[in-house]
Length: 288
Ligand code: FAD
Image 1 (tube, rainbow, N blue to C red):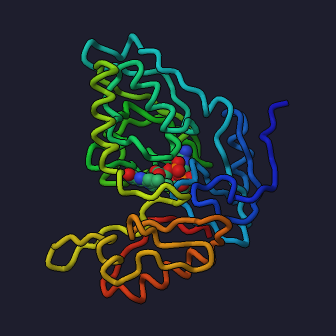
Image 2: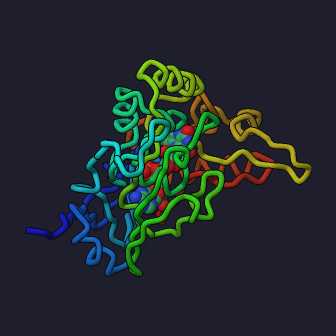
């Protein structure tokens, strides 16, 4: 059987925040299933680590990358690799980033350490060029395969209009697999870099969350403000609606204390917007 697995399931199971109603979930095993999966309105689900999905669920189908899209080939490609730069085989877009980083560390392969602690899938991290001040997904990209209803293409980063937290890949074009561009190092040195990037996360909450809620706003004067600081100064740390809370550890995180609804989270976002005097752009994606 070559068909995709199609099930109606609550998206709360697939998001780090743990909220979201039902949708028809298409878990793909390989390239042969892409065409049919994209034949009706769809959304692409990665690690669900940047999403607030509505309690009512979704009318579109949700595509998940399993099977060959969750496979990892880190063998150096002899045609493309040199002693300074190693280019891997294909790594699936559905591969969880944290596990991939552990493998790279063990092999002593450098370039992606800056993305440590981001609970994304590789494809999702690439799609939005996720990262920290220590580095971003595009630091370790040689080339990528992108599939849309118009067809399949393989591109290099130089062929994309990518920038800060943006790959330039249109929405609903699927990052199906990636070849990584890495630098041979040692497990110890890679671990050191990962530890340095990880230290910056010390103050982040441990509860279920979709990460930072708002982007740090820039004033017309060019001054950059901290979203967390603004929310804290508005006296909102620890505010609660239902089972969602503005984290006491860091005010730019909304956490699910257990059994929160998307409506609770939306109410907290509205509270923040009404109390913080500066216009802040949302970091999360709202589905729908
Ligand atoms: P999802 O949340 O599943 O989806 C997000 C978007 O990506 C959707 O539009 C989806 O359609 C699209 N997408 C997913 N997979 C694919 C694919 N294969 N092809 C095309 N499009 C796809 N982000 C940072 O940048 N830096 C951080 O330091 C950071 N820290 C975080 C810490 C925590 C604890 C959490 C929960 C989140 C954090 N985030 C951070 C946010 C989040 O992890 C990133 O935005 C990440 O890139 C989302 O990837 P995902 O695979 O989870 O995508």
